[in-house]
Structure formats: C-alpha cells, structure tokens
Amino acid sequence: MKQKADVQQGTLALMVLKTLDVLGPLHGYGIARRIGQISGDLLSVNQGTLYPLLLKLEQEGSIASEWGASENNRRARFYRLTPAGRRQLQAEARDWNQTAAIIERFFAARAEDFL
Image (tube, rainbow, N blue to C red; front, side, top):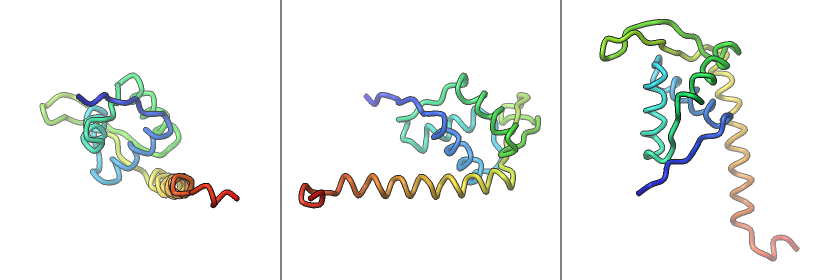
C-alpha cells in the first residue's frame, strides 16, 4: 500500500499553477484531486493547506476566482491562472529545472569527481 506524502507549500503553489495552466478553471476540490491523480496518488493535498494557498495566490494576483456551479450542481469557487500567474509559473519552472539538474549531477558524481 502506498503511503501518501505531504506537499510542501512552495511545491504546492507550483503544482496548483501548473494544474490551472493545463486544465483551465477548476474548483479547489478538482485541483486537489488532479494533483493526487498526477502523483499516482502519492501526494495528498488537504483542504487546510490548499485553501489558504489559493487565497494567497489570489491576493498576489497569480490566480483569479469566481463563483460557479460544480459538476454536481453545487456552488463552488473556480480558480483560473492570470497572466501574472503564467509568468510566475514559467520562472518557478525554470528554477525547479535548474535545481533538479544540479541535484542530478551530485547523484551521478563518483568519488574521483570530487578530487
């Protein structure tokens, strides 16, 4: 049985922005579900972490929201990526890719590489 991992705040913001970039407007539950699906259900995003982050991203101007009806006809807040959010996503993706490349070099290094 897989154990679900917690998601760090900065990492979660990047995942939320990318999810909205790919799928367009979604409500909070849909965002959390999609992150779980993409991770192969290894990540669990709880509402106590997600909704404060969505509020923060909205206050920063990275996302915008409006009320609408969910697929089961319930009132829900739908979030969408703004142009500022798209720029933030691109910058953070570059940073993550650079960090991952550096870490990969260390994992591939042999003892003689450090001499």
